Image (cartoon, rainbow, N blue to C red; front, side, top):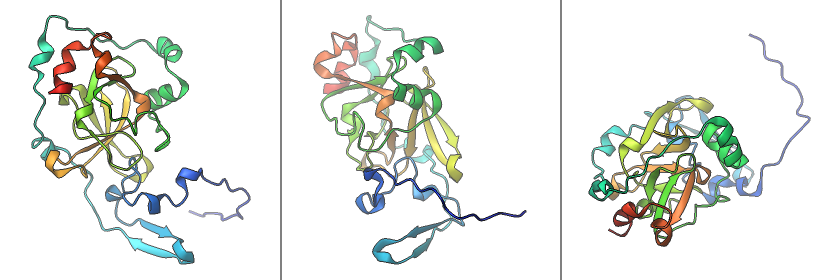
Length: 232
């Protein structure tokens, strides 16, 4: 195989929030975890004008099975009341008209929104986070924490059965993608660098895949039976 090397003629400067990103965020990209890079890759940095190469040792892809068993599930007894709702996924045509361009890109085309510049990264009011596609509850405010990665981070979903995990080998890495079970919406990824005292998982989720409902509006919007989980 012959590879032709040509002179660089075009260069697009990255957005300001990506400038010196790893200096501002030592943990790295939320959706591109360096812990999951395959062996043989190297990171180059021009910090202080020097070229620094760090070899990354071979690491295993993130496995959530061991840590998941240590995470206590929510008490879902309060979700068995008589006001059960039925959630459904709209067809593609309806979704295209109901979702914003960013929401459609993230949930239907496996996209990723910009870090820090998204709706729920700094949202810490009491409430519930539902699938933007189906309205099905997925995460609680009580399980949300500030991971510093620029996207909403949760230690666990309301129930494991609400999510589907898939191996994601895009960008030459091995990660675990998280999708909603009913809506089949791309939500984000799950990593094993979360708070150890809360199970060790970090569900890194795109704001565009969620809709936040504050506690004081849950009853009015039909999510009253989940209020006990939020305040409990």
